[in-house]
Image 1 (cartoon, rainbow, N blue to C red):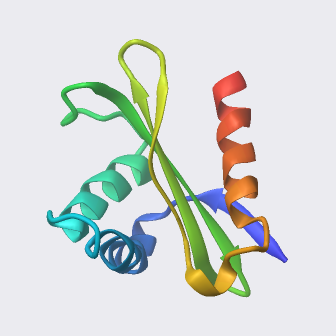
Image 2 (cartoon, rainbow, N blue to C red):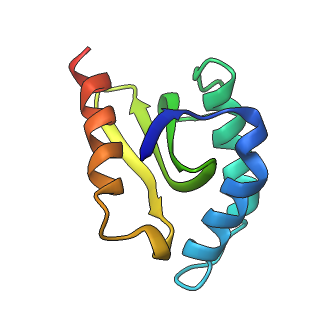
Length: 112
């Protein structure tokens, strides 16, 4: 069964690798450093004091049998909008509705 929960600082190594593996083939940049910034921000109360255009970083993880199989980070922007950045599901977990579960959780947050 897939469980959705808020990110914890201890999730950083796994998320950094997931982001690097998923994003590096398509564009450059230090995806591990980006993961560190957003995980640390989201795990420590969400307020984004380093972001120029963002107010908060909110991250959820999808877990199955103790393994993180998906992540969804979204940025709360100053103008009151939300931006998904990133949504990643491990290849072996695709087709199981993991993205939908993560997006449903974001929608619940947005409605509040």
